[in-house]
Image (cartoon, rainbow, N blue to C red; front, top):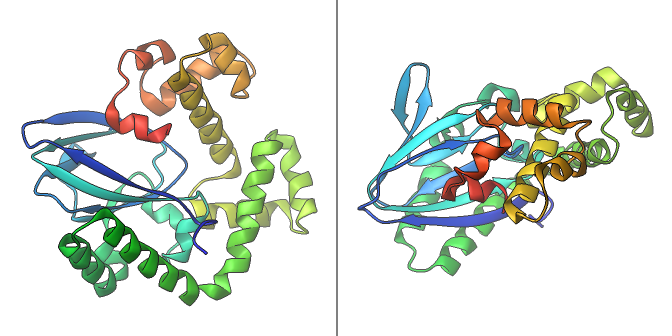
Length: 260
C-alpha cells in the first residue's frame, strides 16, 4: 500500500568517536529522520549551524546544505517519492524548502509517540513494522487526496520522459488540465516547479552515473540529458558547489545515500 509513496527506509549508524562534516545535495525527495542515538546533528541556517530536532522533516533541498555531527548516531530515515509527502502534511510543500523542521511541531503528538516506540523497539524489523503501521494509517486518513497525489506522480513521470520546456503544455493536455494548473499542482505537492524538478532529476541521474564510475564525464552529461558539457557543469555546481571532477574527489557517506 505504501509502495507508490515511500521510496525506501534506511538506517545510518556511526561511532561516537567520529566527528563529521558534509554537504547535502538536492535529491528531489523529502525525508523524515528519526534520531534514536545520543549524537547531535546540526544543519546550516542563516549565518550559522542549528541543532536538528529528534524527528527531522527535511524539506526540498534546492541548493547545497552544510551539515555536521558529533557523537554516536542511530538514525532511521524515511524517503518519500517526490510528490508523496503531502499525504503526511496539510501544508503546501514549498513552505518547507531548504530547511529542517521538527516534525512534531508540524503534525503533533502522534509522531512523538511513534518516536518513543521506535526508541524502545529491540530490532530493525520491529521498527520497520512500526513505521509501516504509522504511515499506512496516515495514508488511509488521507484517502481523499490519493487521486490527486497519483495524478501528480503520473505528471512527474511524464516530465522525466519528455522534459523539454515547450512540452509542458502537451503534457498538461494529456491529463486534461491547463498548463497553469499543472504548475500549481506540481508545486503544491512537491515544492518544485516542473522545470526545477526536471533539473534535479537530471542532476540525480548524473550522480548515479558518477557513482557507478564506468563512464567519462562527457558521456555522463549526455546520458543524464544535458545538452552539452558546460550546461552539465553549471547545473552540477549550482547543486553541489563543486565541479563534477571535484565531487568525485570528495564523495562521502551521506551523499552516497543520495545515489543509492
